[in-house]
Image 1 (cartoon, rainbow, N blue to C red):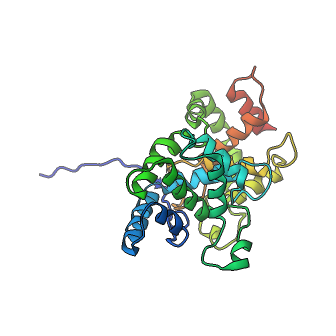
Image 2 (spheres, helix red, strand yellow):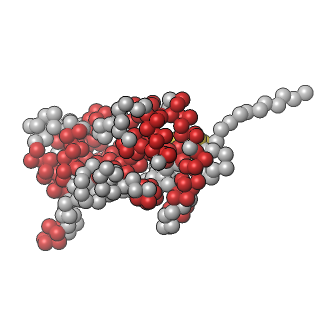
Image 3 (cartoon, helix red, strand yellow):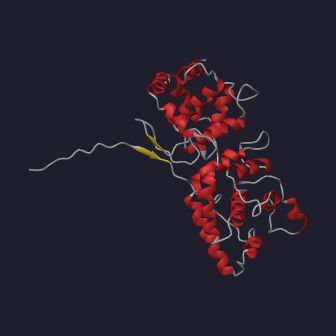
Length: 311
């Protein structure tokens, strides 16, 4: 006799964070002056510090990406892929890095922003010209390293960075309570409303998910990137002049509506990306847009979402 055991399982899409080095690479030359100030002069010691920093950054790569996206889109002008001085200052204030202003005065914050914008591999006029007034992801990460060396003065640079991320940045950055909104979305009436519109919304999602025909996007034809979401919002006149949302606001919603794990519906293909939305995330984004476009305090959330989707 034999016993046959049937195991019920579900297919799960796991979002993997692709590490191309943008948020995890540290150039020792860029931080040479800070290492020297902290008594780290030996080349071997500098290499060890950089390796430790990279390890900390890799452990927090998802958080770093989303925090950068949030603050890069926080200002009124400029690209949503880089952080200007005002956006950098918003980040510093939100995470309360100036609790001790003697260690990190405002002048030092401005000097750190300026230092991160300079390419120290260049000389003379070329070095000065390299300052474009905007921090790309790599320069922002360099800024985190510089900030942690002033915020905390004991331990290795990697331990200081980890302490700053755990105690200051992660608890305070992006000061929005996403969980409250998601808790409301998880209510039965809201879920019923979204399910009722699925027949119409799913084909729209599939259409726009295939809109971006660039090389990277062609590999994810059943998920939507931020460019495709902006196109969708523009076509529906959800993006533009007030009362419509700005492109930056759309990209911020895109970043916050990405989830760590999603069930794959029957017939869906598996895709793995750190910057793509599946259908459930797309509908969460629509719910967020609907709640902003219909800010009626006398209507419950499911009615506002239903009105938005119908119109």
